[in-house]
Amino acid sequence: MKNSIKCNNCMTENPFYQLNCINCKAYLRSKVPNIDFWMLTSKLFESPVKAAELLIYADHKNFLISIIILAAIKISLTAGILSNVFSEGKGSLQSIYLTLSSLPIIFIILMLVWAFIITILLKIAGIKSRYKDNLVIYTYSFIPVVFTLFILTPVEYALFGQYWFTFNPPPFAFKYIPSLLLSIIEGIFFVWSLFLAICATFAQSRSLLFSIIFGVLFITVTLGIPIYSAYLLNNPI
Image 1 (tube, one colour):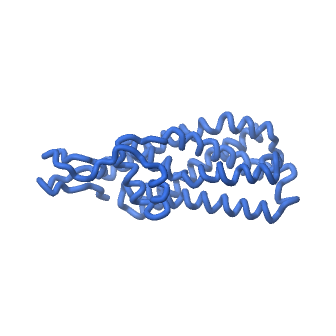
Image 2 (cartoon, one colour):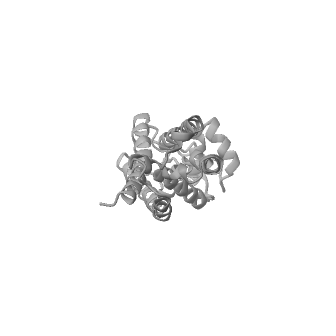
């Protein structure tokens, strides 16, 4: 794998993220001081790889902390709901509170560790990357999931109240069509996040196979471990 930029002035190979040539200090690309959130969001629709590149180029990774916290809350809610399904409806609202107080921390730790692992893997593959760039591109891949926190979660709670979270009785038992539609929409947004994670990986690696493998693995880890953790909270050994 190779992801570098050649200086037109001295022909030196530079890391992809470099602003100035490491040899002659000539400019290699346009400077991106900050992340324009709404412009970047539109880019996620139009050209996800270009959006990831802008995140890598940005000097200041603004909104990173806010997005990772909001994503942690939504992933924790989703993990709690799915764990209750796997627990056959034994979960309670109390377990959801416990989930929301512990899983966000687990999710944030997973994100920090994942960015470190990807940085090491890219280095092994011969690609120079920065930890903060990997953290921000994977965090921003959860933008669709963050949208559902503000768009779908209030609708779900308005329709089902605490039963959307406890599954006792399950929402499908008394409002089948709305439950099915909301679940499908949620699933679409998570698939979109998976696609963005693959595009984010591709922006760094330029390898389609590597991007698919580690994009899928990223979503599996950051969703699967919270779900399993929530299941253990609902079903202590």
